[in-house]
Amino acid sequence: MNHGCVVDGCDTAARARGWCSRHYQRWQRTGDPTGTIPRGSRCDAWQHGSRRGYQTGCRCFPCRVANNRYQRAHRQGHTVRIPIDQVLAHLDQLTRSGWTLAAITDAADLGNSTLYQLRSGRQQTVNPRTAGAILDLEPYRGPERLPAGPLVDAIRTRQGHRRLTELLPNVEDRRAFYRAADSGTVNEPIADRLAIGALGLTIEAIYGWQAVAS
Image 1: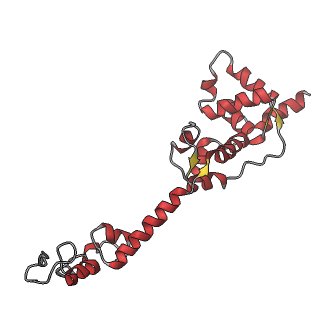
Image 2 (image 1 turned 180 degrees about the horizontal axis):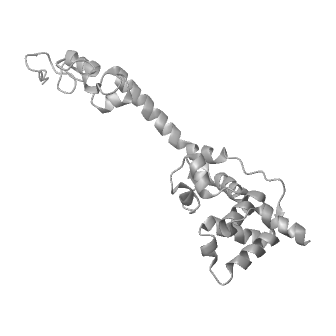
Image 3 (image 1 turned 45 degrees about the vertical axis):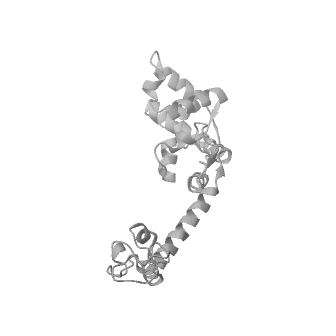
């Protein structure tokens, strides 16, 4: 048995959601089957025919189309992921050339913990925005790599019996120092950063002393 429309005063047979065809179509257009709510009043704070209009309760055709378009684009965007190996390789290249993680975070406009999460090994892919922001950064291009001996010796002499953390509180600076000591060479930006941070001197002063001594 086909019941009548649930709207008061309407005796037409119900077709969908308990409404007749006329009231159902009115609900689709305006979001209200009785037409007592003016068109677009449910999304006054947002542009009518937008996704936010749909989320605030408007079920008119433009708002539904905007919402469906957003959901489709959102799903497609999350299916495209960048392999993390490529991003980590470039990240390592940046840090070796003189970038610190804090500088990369600021330049790429990333969250404070994003780079640590990427380097944790728990992820296999990266979203396109994060990957693109990191891959767009260029490594520092210093003139030539400097011999690390004078810088390492100066820091070791200044260190004495103290911990290296007292001279270089930044963990990235300490890692750069150990890499320079192991490899025997260091590029100019890293050397300058370590010299200023640990000694309060510029690399011109350190390597100038070496030139005079030699």
